[in-house]
Length: 332
Length: 247
Image (tube, each protein chain N blue to C red):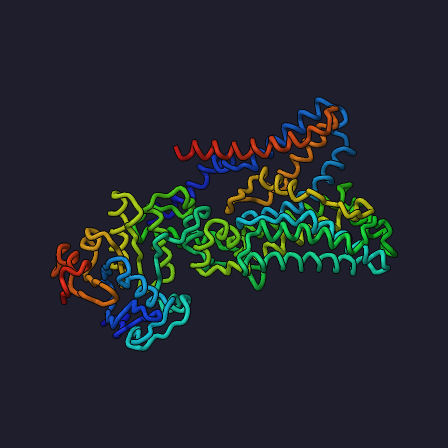
């Protein structure tokens, strides 16, 4: 009896290395580290405080949304509306603050908007059974249009009495010279990672992506979890929008256009499986980081920026191909 | 003494009589093989016991008291568990996670509760040991054989200490070698005093593990007897209608 119960513990230690090497996020992490090392030696502008500060801050916006997107993808869904939701939430924040309200009210209005949009997405998907692709594609169009309506398609760059607070929120550096967005990103990633691994909610998210019917049969509140997941995704876009507004100091109605694809790319490179059931918070960060490092390195190495899409696209395909090959060798 | 008793149960869907006046007794530590052709009423009967349907006529009694169920959750609360044909497992989760799906163990105080992995792994390991299955709690279901998957699904019923387990075609989709493993799982479950209803098309499996056999044909019960007093030939005749009935 005792020996039989010991087996799982031994197995855990022996399999530690194979567990690590079976993780897509680990290999992408390795790729990021190697790319950074290479760039540090190949250029003298990469490993400067300034450049590192820029890189870490630039990928936070993608990364924060990729966290929410990864959770949606784990349930087997997709959220195409995040780029537009980011724009709408930024615009709501900007318009409300421009009208003279405080930053607290601006943020509340902005996150409230995200919450409502996420809830609409979630209810249509979970309760009416409309495919996520269709619902969020519609919302992509609606949110962008609402942002134009809210601002009358103008650029907002004056944020009323609390303008300085907003600019510090997004552009400042509170802790040891680390830019604020990075701090938020790390905090959100820790929360997301903890939730996925250690809570019942996280377990249910994975179960829905693994076998939705089984989850329903075993009493998992599938519909409520799905609504929550799309709310989380929308809120992550809203949060990214608020931070980005503070950093840029201006909001236009084409903010975040096409961002949904970059976010999905980051999640997939980080190991999230579009078929559902697989993904990590760490992977979302690493995937976003890789995209930013590619972008940054191309400009530092003097390569035409038009090549960026080729490299990012290539990485998406390579990452998924690696995963395929590993699966083949496992089943053989 | 019967744990569960169906008394003259009928189920009509409009003009269609899916079940007509069927009475069955389930006893602790007994495996009842439920056989019948497609459309004979097997799944309707199972769904009535599982709380999916309410009978149009007749009553269900549990330990002598009448049982009225509106939802499958209520059947679970009364100790009735179903092992579905497709097993209802999540491939991407571990064996232990699947066993505890929907019934996770927690630790912590107040709203700060986290999943209690240690307890769940230990309890799952205990159940697998009890079932004499080599399934390991930390293995992903994706990597398991058909027999191990079946063990995970059956372990779920042990977790709740079910009194009645309904098994829908447990040997239909697995290799011949694993059938023996699943049949021995069923025997372990019976040895624990569970009343088991085994729905199967596979005659050899029913005859090797069941104590009693019930045959349905066109919504009526046409046989209910000890397995020793029957034969595969007779059962085939009962299912097809070549033999009218046998009690």
